[in-house]
Amino acid sequence: MKPLESLLRSFVELHPDEASRAFEALDLDERIRLFTTLPTRIAVTLMQRISPHAVAPMVMGLDRDRSKELLCALPPRIASSVLTHTEESYRTDLLECLPENLSRSLRALAKYPGDTAGAMMEPRVASLSSDFTVQQATTAIRKAPREALHYLYVTNRDGILAGVINMRDLLLAAPKDPITPLIKTELLTVPDTMPSKDVVQKMREKRFLAIPVVDYDGRLVGVVKQSDALRVVQDAAFDNMQKIVGAGADERALSPVRLVVKSRLPWLLVNLVTAFMAAAVIGAFEGIIAQVAALAVLLPVVAGQGGNTGSQSLAVVMRGLALREVIPGTTRQLITKELAAGVINGVAVAIVTAIAVFSWRLVAGDSMTAGFGLALVIGMAMIVNMAAAALAGAVIPLILQACGRDPAQSAAIFLTTVTDIVGFAAFLGFASLCMPLIT
Image (cartoon, rainbow, N blue to C red):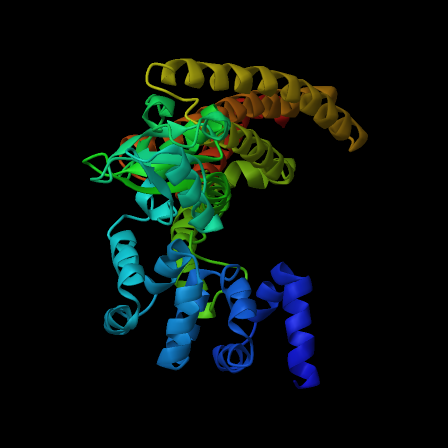
């Protein structure tokens, strides 16, 4: 073995997460070249940690036998995710070359939408037949692959899930006794079409290590493991964080520039339009700003406080939607609570800001009347903008959800538009009304 290959294997074995990030940063040709030098066990360790969209072109670049070998060694759920990112013609040809049982599992997984229990489940699950004796059941458990054993699920001859058996009850029973009396039929299951977020919610409530997944007829088709549910939660959190600011959900730190531009540019253009709208509001009060230069200095203060207030409200509401804390009938209470908090915080911040502005203008040489007028203007504007920002932060994701859109989709861009326009309009509008005091 060459020193470089030995070093690479040691790196992957000792630090698999760091190695996966380093591999994603390499060019495709370099990744393919290095993968041909790795044994299957080491290569699979990497493939399970690299994003599927980065693994897919690499698999397509390997020779057919090597691709087949790697896919057979991967867990079916991950292998299916990798195949969905390959070209359709290549995927069809490769599935024909795979073993029949694996090909069938991958085809079945490919039919499920990505946000369902079927897509996130592990299809490898061992089960006991309901007509087994205790001795037959223990023999079957010993022969079953370790990765396929989760709970002791029991099915009838048609594969329909009948219940679950406690391991303690099985070990204490006589070898020749049937297992039927030991079966507990009260069992939590999820349909294969259930949205993944609902599955995660059930696992959070019940704290199970795995939940069985059944099809329309009640047949056991897989299990959702706690680790997979955690992965879904983490992915959803990061996706929402990216979508809130207008980045694509599929974008990663080392994604190609083409993908980055494609996902970000449309929302940057939308943000540009909203920025011109805010600029138009300032332009409408150009004469007032020309008379009192201090107004231009204080504009970012009003807009910034509104942006922070709206972001706080938006984060709380997004969390409530994700964790199902916001249910039908609580919308009015939620909006009222956020608006009240915005008003109260606005009053508190307005008092502090008004005192600071008043002191600043006195030090700058303005009269007490002018200082009081400017403090009054920014105080009123702060209350209005922070109340509007809190309201917008609560309402925007709710409106997006009601329209059938992702509540996280560029919510921050829409929120910034509201806080800038309302903040500028309120501040400069109050200034125009109080010009006799300010000047």
